[in-house]
Image 1 (cartoon, rainbow over the protein chains, first blue to last red):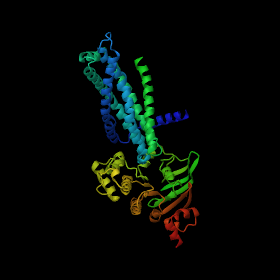
Image 2 (image 1 turned 180 degrees about the vertical axis):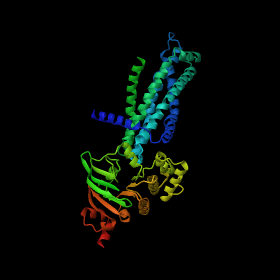
Image 3 (image 1 turned 180 degrees about the horizontal axis):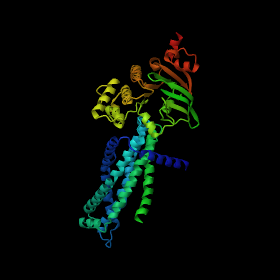
Image 4 (image 1 turned 60 degrees about the vertical axis):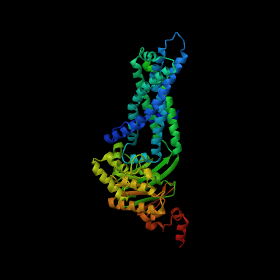
Length: 247
Length: 249
């Protein structure tokens, strides 16, 4: 318990150090553009691949579980749409990014810590926490909502392709289903969740990397711990946000 | 000038530095020597503020370092350069970008002025045609020299070197030692070097502080170190068989 309090306190103190005025806005902006590519653009492919397949599986499972004449087949499209928008594209994609982006952040910053690069930055009079962590947090918070939108679009497309090619639903029924009683607020809800998850992923991963002590073994362990903590936090915050925003 | 008064530092219950008082003058290569685990690096990192000290005072000229806030420390650190044991070059940046980094952060120079300064610093440490290389493409000695170039990029008043010769062959080590000495004289910097390399001590030790078990056991210079009657110092200085033979003769 004492350790949890200590870690929580140190995390918030680090965040206080991260969100200070940058020494040089131009350098930070350059760093941000780098991070947008590394943490955002480079994640598009994995989001696309996973979304296509999960969209396809959701459609097929919905179809096989609703094989009853009393259910209209457009429900398959509707089920696919709502599952993807409400949970998959925000929460499941966040869990995947916690593994990909989170571990990369922890190992990058952790390696910089154990090789004294962070000390070198501090020695130059630069706020190392702000310089290293702030661009990563801003990049993920800005870019991850786009990943969610991409995931929604590609996931539904994957569902349509699988449903039509497997012959479980007609193209017209599927398209009718994804338009049927569409609630735009669900997309807003999904995007808001994504912003929270993006902040958690990048800040927790950076925190675990920033305070690594030891060598490469400890950096590896910190990456694993960061992914585990991120996953648990994402699931817990998901419950809270769902209750707050959908009740 | 850097003055340290009654500095003590512990990690948990383990006392690592005990009541250290010492003065380091500008224009002189000041060495802190001692065996591994004696507290040299902790002392150096405490002096530059990378470790929080338990007791004591650290003065940079007339500036009392202990009580400085975040902004004041940031300002004084712009006047410091540090060479780390493993060089600590930024892996993702080229040699040129590494040296230019402090200028990008703090100077209002134009790109051309910065590039000129980078080239000057790299030439000063005898690095040629390596601007576009990444640290992973450099040898150990080159990394150290690039790290020195980065440390002097903003014309610092204080230079700190943590084991500058570790992992280098004897000839390259001498090159690095001479470079540090020359830069110290040329820029009249207050330079503190941590080392356990007796070659370096005999080459550059204008002032030598010997630390053992976190305490200063002896202070002097390279000209007096061989004649000391301090047993702990003699054990350290004449630890290897070559030195023992020299002493025997």
